[in-house]
Structures are given as C-alpha cells and as structure tokens.
Length: 501
Ligand SMILES: *[C@@H]1O[C@H](CO)[C@@H](O)[C@H](O)[C@H]1NC(C)=O
Ligand SMILES: *[C@@H]1O[C@H](CO)[C@@H](O)[C@H](O)[C@H]1NC(C)=O
Ligand SMILES: *[C@@H]1O[C@H](CO)[C@@H](O)[C@H](O)[C@H]1NC(C)=O
Ligand SMILES: *[C@@H]1O[C@H](CO)[C@@H](O)[C@H](O)[C@H]1NC(C)=O
Ligand SMILES: *[C@@H]1O[C@H](CO)[C@@H](O)[C@H](O)[C@H]1NC(C)=O
Ligand SMILES: *[C@@H]1O[C@H](CO)[C@@H](O)[C@H](O)[C@H]1NC(C)=O
Ligand SMILES: *[C@@H]1O[C@H](CO)[C@@H](O)[C@H](O)[C@H]1NC(C)=O
Ligand SMILES: *[C@@H]1O[C@H](CO)[C@@H](O)[C@H](O)[C@H]1NC(C)=O
Ligand SMILES: *[C@@H]1O[C@H](CO)[C@@H](O)[C@H](O)[C@H]1NC(C)=O
Image (cartoon, rainbow, N blue to C red; front, side, top):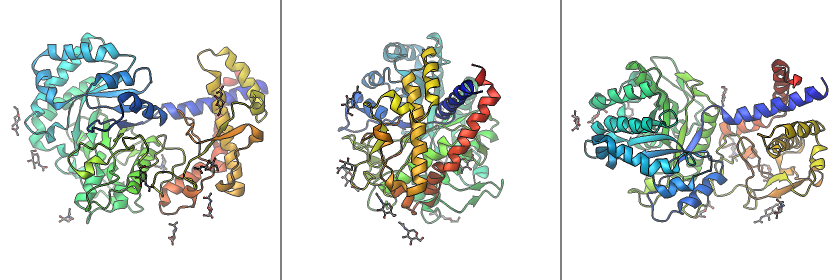
C-alpha cells in the first residue's frame, strides 16, 4: 500500500469520472436553420462547443455546416430531406453521387454517425411514405460501397402519429395500420442493420391540445402523483415515458424486440400564441432540465428500465421562418447567441430551474471559481499530496494530457471544498480563495464530465417551487454522497488490483 495505493486510488477516481462522462444515454440538440437571422454555421458550431453539446442533428447535409463542425469531435446526425426521397429512391447513382460529393469530402474530419432519410413522412404532404425504405436502402448501399455502413447508421424520423393511440402505453401498443405498408419493411430494415427507430416526442402538444385531461406537472416531469397503466400496473410519473413506452409496446407487438428507440426531437417552446399559456421560458427550462436529468441518469422508462435512450432537444435557435408563433420559439438561444434560459447539458451541475430567466446570480452574471493560471502547480498540489504521485505517473502516459488529469483532480478538490463550506455556511458564503489559487470567471469553465457549480448564487437551493429538481440537486452536493464516491473508488481500486501498477 502507501504510494501505490494512492496512485490506484487516484486512478480509479479518474476512471469513475471518465466512465461517468462516457457511458450511457446522451443528449444532443437539433440545429434547425429555418430562419433568416441566424449566425453563420461557424458561429453556431462555436456556440455548441462553448455549451459542451456533443451531439447535433441537422436536417440536411449543408456543406457550410459540415465544414463548421469539422475537427470539433461533435457527432453529427445529418438528413436527407423529404424532397430528395424521390430521386434517392429511384436511382442508386443518385445516392452514390450525393455521398461522394456532399459527405465523403468532409468525413471523417466531420464526425457523422447517423443519416436520417426522410423526416416525419407520415405528416408530409404528398404520398412520400412509400419512397422512404427504397431511399434508405440506396443510401445504405452507397455507404457499403464506401465501407462506412458500420460507422454511419441509416434511419428515418417519425412523429408519434405513426401510433394509433398513445395511452395507456400497453394498449396503445399498435402502429396505425394505414402506415403498415411502409412501416413493416422499415422495421425489418432497422432490425437487420442495427439502426434505431427515431421518434419525435412532444408532450407539449399533447398537453396544449388536451389541457383538461393532462396536468402540466405530468408533462414537465414534475408530477408527484402517478398515472397507472391498468394493463401492466406500471406507474408513469411523466408523459415522456408514457409516450416512449407506447412505442416500445408497438414494436414488441410486431415482435421487433431488439430495435432501439432514439428521440430525434423533443422540447418545449418559450413563447407561443396568446392562448398557449404553458409556452413560457420557465416551463421550457423546467422541461428540458428535467429531460436531461432523466436521460443522463439512465433511468429508462417503466417498461424498459435502464434502457439507453438518446434524445435531441429541439432546437438550438429560435427560428423565425416557422409558420406559427409557437413554432418559432423552441430555441435554447436567440439568433444573437444569447440564452433564452439557462440549461445545463450535463444534467449534473447547478441549474436554476425556478427563475427561468436570462441569468441566475444576484447581480445578473454567473461566476465560477477555477484554478488561477498564476498559481503554481505546487500551490494546487498542496491541497492533496497524492497529486505528486499522479504527476509522476502522468509523465509516463503520453496519450492522456496531464493537464486534463490535474484539472479533474482540481475539480474534485473544488467540489470537496464547496461541499464542506456548503454544509457549514450555506452556498452564499462560498469564497473563491483556495489560498489565492482560485479566481472567479464569468464563463462556464465546465467541459466533458468536469462540471463547475456557480459560486455565490443560492437561488436553486432556496427555491421550493420545483421541489423535485431542487431535491435531487441538494442530494448531489451532500457530503455523504461524495464520501461514498470516495469509498467506492477505494473499493474498486482494491478489486481491480490497480495498486500493482
Ligand atoms: C401511398 O402509396 C402506397 C404505395 O404506393 C399506397 O399503398 C398507399 O395507399 C398510398 N397512400 C395514400 C394515402 O395515398
Ligand atoms: C391512421 O392514419 C390515417 C392516415 O394518416 C388517418 O386518417 C387515421 O385517422 C389514423 N388513425 C388513427 C387511429 O390515428
Ligand atoms: C378527456 O377525457 C375524457 C374521458 O377520458 C374524454 O372524453 C375527453 O374527450 C378528453 N378531453 C380532451 C380534451 O382530450
Ligand atoms: C436516477 O436513478 C435512480 C435509480 O436508478 C432513481 O432512484 C432516481 O430517482 C433518478 N433520478 C432522477 C432525477 O431521475
Ligand atoms: C432575456 O433576454 C432577452 C433578450 O436579451 C430579453 O428580451 C428578455 O426580456 C430577458 N428576460 C428577462 C426575464 O430578463
Ligand atoms: C457581479 O458580481 C461579481 C462578483 O461579485 C463581480 O465580479 C461582477 O463584476 C459583477 N457583475 C456586475 C455586472 O455587476
Ligand atoms: C492567465 O489568465 C489571464 C486572465 O485570466 C489571461 O489574460 C492570460 O492570458 C492567462 N494566461 C495563460 C498563459 O493562460
Ligand atoms: C441566499 O438565500 C437567503 C435565504 O433564502 C437570502 O436571504 C440571501 O439573500 C440569499 N443570498 C444570495 C446571494 O442570493
Ligand atoms: C415555498 O412553499 C411555501 C408553502 O408551500 C410557499 O408559501 C412559499 O411561497 C414557497 N416559496 C417559494 C419561494 O416559492
């Protein structure tokens, strides 16, 4: 034990932090461009990076957008619009040429992982449904010729309208039979190629269109009561889960049990027509915050607990060319790139769910406490002698930047400090001192799995308007919770025998 043990301890802590950020379900964002006032794609890509968003869905294969996301590490889902389905379904060469001219020149610098062929075809005017599967097959063939069919998956997105009903989930378990002619071959295609069924889920519209029967809390993941599915006895606390499960039951009813589900659009508008009283920044923030927590937590749904479920939030920007007022205000950002409301994409940090306006701290700006670049390495290390061992070890590991590792450790130390001071004095008194080693910044320094809490704001904890969210936040920062992480880390160290390194 001794040195080696400490090294193992640090390693397994690191492992925990990394695993935490790399496994399980993810949250992306839809980058729609149906507007005439949006920033250029380069700026949009910068914004996405700044906010730690790792997955982006676009609706076409615009060259400027593909270029903007090159070498960012951000995974892109690109689309073949419905207007191209006819040509893609008619001739293989059309799909081949598109791939060769529009995609391959930018791949793999731009990390493309999905191609959606057609979008919500059942809602589309004209009978394009029949073209989807032939077009998907041609795109897949083109990918096979380029040797990319294992790296880029082909699917198509759908509205919940493909189901005949959606409640109760088990009984709804059926696709609308009038779509069967194209859905059956589509499902066979997905099962054969390991592609997910892509669905767009909008509890907002379900609530808006039958507000008398559905509580707002249920739509916003805030419900304290449950809705029982009489057939299965499963309890639903939110509409999102109920809608997803309706889809699972529909898939199971047709015996497609292996097909995964992916949510390619969901969200909540911050503004609507005068009648749409639930379209507010507060509700949008609550829905998306709770959605992210729900997804990142890998909770799954009542029918498939723990099942991975990736979601994309609609949408990055407000889009002024959409037809209806409520369709123009789904953005997380205004075209000038300022936030419509704060949203933490990691689902773990501190987000002020209750205030729902532009900024959270008392004087209108958020501040974070980070390691000052002036402070010497030794200042930081003095907080944890084990770091010396870590530094020695990182020298041997060329693949991992030691900077990243010391940042992770620094982050853990910060959390320990925050936790300690929180318990003693409450969040308001948190100082950014660390013996002069820390400085305040007003840009969120969080990256990957490394989250920073805002300093000097206690609104989140103080508020009781969103009881569920606040509760989960405060437990997250509990001292015992962090202690148990440390004990777990130690335990894993022993289990893995890492101390023999
Ligand atoms: C759409 O086309 C398919 C196949 O051509 C056909 O079976 C289906 O009835 C058509 N649907 C409508 C609404 O025209
Ligand atoms: C099924 O789809 C058809 C065609 O889109 C539509 O007319 C019908 O109302 C749908 N049935 C149900 C039960 O949703
Ligand atoms: C509410 O539910 C009742 C019975 O379940 C139904 O008859 C009614 O149409 C629903 N109202 C709305 C607005 O969906
Ligand atoms: C996270 O998951 C655990 C169990 O898997 C559950 O008890 C908890 O309520 C979940 N938290 C949220 C915010 O969904
Ligand atoms: C948020 O910012 C937008 C634009 O910057 C502004 O129009 C809006 O009034 C602000 N909302 C609040 C609650 O301050
Ligand atoms: C807000 O407070 C922080 C720290 O208390 C300070 O550094 C910052 O300048 C203030 N911002 C404004 C706009 O007053
Ligand atoms: C250190 O921080 C200051 C202000 O925060 C910044 O101007 C400077 O460029 C930084 N230096 C390095 C080497 O990052
Ligand atoms: C923190 O909360 C307390 C009680 O809710 C309040 O009196 C105080 O002003 C808050 N401080 C800040 C910085 O928001
Ligand atoms: C907290 O809850 C109490 C009782 O439920 C209520 O009277 C009070 O206004 C709430 N406080 C806030 C900040 O919402």
